[in-house]
Image 1 (cartoon, rainbow, N blue to C red):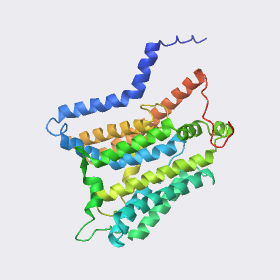
Image 2 (cartoon, one colour; image 1 turned 180 degrees about the horizontal axis):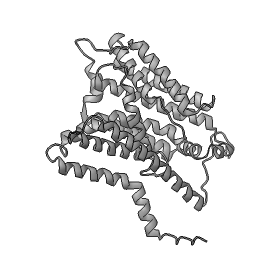
Image 3 (cartoon, rainbow, N blue to C red; image 1 turned 30 degrees about the horizontal axis):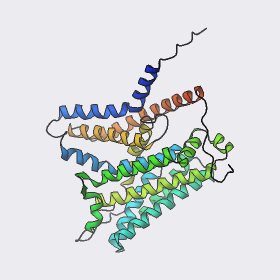
Image 4 (tube, rainbow, N blue to C red; image 1 turned 90 degrees about the vertical axis):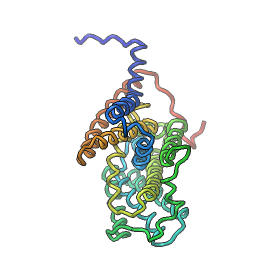
Length: 348
């Protein structure tokens, strides 16, 4: 008979929680210090930090967007195609159609939300697996991208894009690049939605046990659709930001951001609130990836090192996310259950 393991002391449990929740934060600091020692003249400079924050703003926004479906246990593989379509539509409307850039941005954001809603309806009501459904809708988005561009790039005229539009990416505020502030603001919004509002609790319950969510009266399909709608809206934001960054419409650029976004979201589910997708954890994970990739690049690594780094990190992230989820489930079983907030529309 296997002897029972002695219970861990409160201090040991506390230490384990701190390591699990803030290990990625510590890793970020260690990576930054290591690369700063290896590259003292280039890495720990304000210009380099600003460049890292700017260059990784679009992957960070996408990672935050995909966090919403992951919270419900679903995956949105259409975000890469959606990003490509959103940024191409932005360039097409401004360059070829002559639309005002604020109107264009609004239309693209609404279009992203509509595309996300379609994804949610297909997944929730047609009951098609989210991998297959979003891969299919993503292919449709890619077809629209090819139809709009005819496979060619959209290049602005001699006067370029409106300065106010490119300032969405190029400007600074309080010494920081504005894209970094967008990421921080989006992180704060998603933190409130997921951690401080009933919506987040419903999404987490659906993600952990859809059957239990239905039994307590949560309309699971409706909230899955809302999660995908939010993801599509964030993809629209990323598309506008990408257009302001690249200032050219490239019909094949979107898929380059798919893997980093999922790496950030899945790795983020092992930090801050281990065992579930959360916005602060995603931000920390994206920061780890940004620091690592920037350091590797400045050390002169070959071009193939970046996909190797992303792919390896994704495998590690999936493994760690599964382990953290199992640990969280074990803790829930060992503790008294907490009541789920009463779904809207039910009698008190």
